[in-house]
Length: 82
Image (cartoon, rainbow, N blue to C red; front, side, top):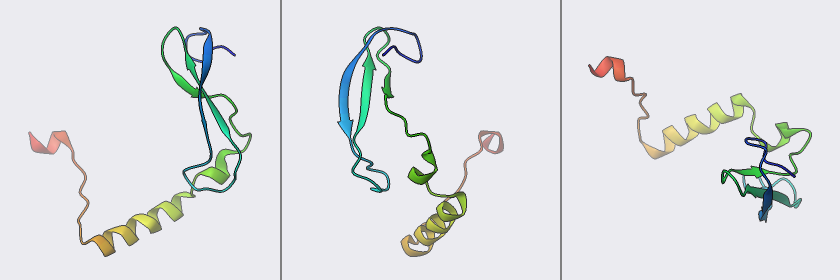
């Protein structure tokens, strides 16, 4: 398998399970490019939607975090600081 970034040769780096949502016991293989050092997922699932929350779920989780932590999350804009 070649590097998707530079086309260089690659070597096995590590394998891991889905640590994001723990939906499956499938092992995912990461490879490392010998030429440029890029790490990439070798066996990308055909449907990634199961591995990532929907946008509305993410917003609900963020709101729950805000309400339970007592922290105010603020956005930073460099233009407003000048």
